[in-house]
Length: 194
Image (cartoon, rainbow, N blue to C red; front, side):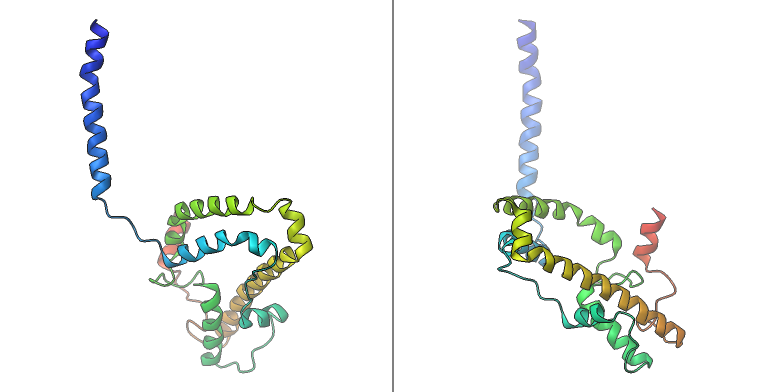
């Protein structure tokens, strides 16, 4: 009898705690997903179509040029033209490591804090990718795997091109964005310190 009486006494605090938790959850406003998160969810949902090579991501022209000749000298080597070329690469690649974080280009810490949302999107992507049987073979036969490698190579070439242009700008005595910012961005310095 003692054990059942004790269970009755313990139950109300548990029920009260659960009720408080549920009420708190109801009053907490939901966070709005970031616009890029919505785009990534769309890409995850259409993964089977890209596996069949029915949907392809286009490689931007500036990255196509970088892929062909990442170390080509720019037509004009003045600071303004180098800054324009770097800005074009920043527009498709995102902020460089020396760039201070802004609303549109979050810093390294902010990018890392988005990892939780990335995990959910990865789970959705894995689920939709599982729809296509023998996915690896299908990607090879359809040409989707080759295109994905080409996109990755274009991104790498664009990153190399941007660093090369900033090096040219630094050698010419230019200031940022035509040359690297000598003081590291705050979020990059904090990330390295941790």
